[in-house]
Amino acid sequence: MVRRWPFLLALRFFGLTPKTAPQFRIYVFEHIHNIVFHGKGGYDYDTVYNMPIWLRKFTFNQIQKHFDEEKKAYEKSRGKNNSTNMVDSDGKVNAPEFLKASKQYQRKSQYK
Image 1 (spheres, rainbow, N blue to C red):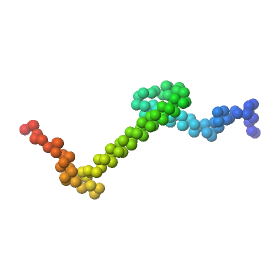
Image 2 (image 1 turned 180 degrees about the horizontal axis):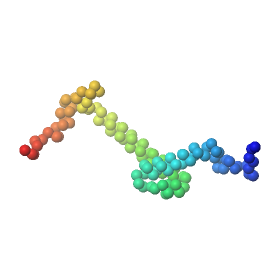
Image 3 (image 1 turned 135 degrees about the vertical axis):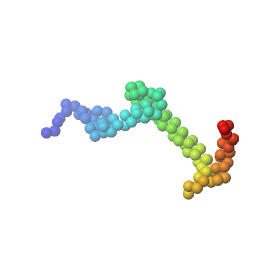
Image 4 (image 1 turned 60 degrees about the horizontal axis):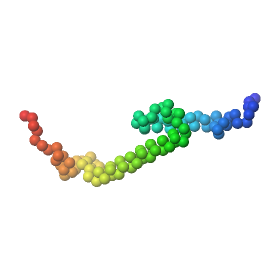
């Protein structure tokens, strides 16, 4: 027997269906988690949960943009330093580079 609802939009309130509602909940809770976790203590769960949707999306996008820029800067700095490796791809130590890098640590010890 098919259940009849007294109004037509019973299962599609705001476009959600029984199949899409769980996916939407996961999406919302992932946003909340990412803002709280990556906000580094700036937000708590209740604050983010009660934020207007437009503000929560804006905050999420700003945090995501910040971490994307940080990742690009990290990759750029890593690419610059890879030109002078102290260890070859074979696992052998590159002696001249190792000597140059260790010069600052070559001092006489102060203990007897």
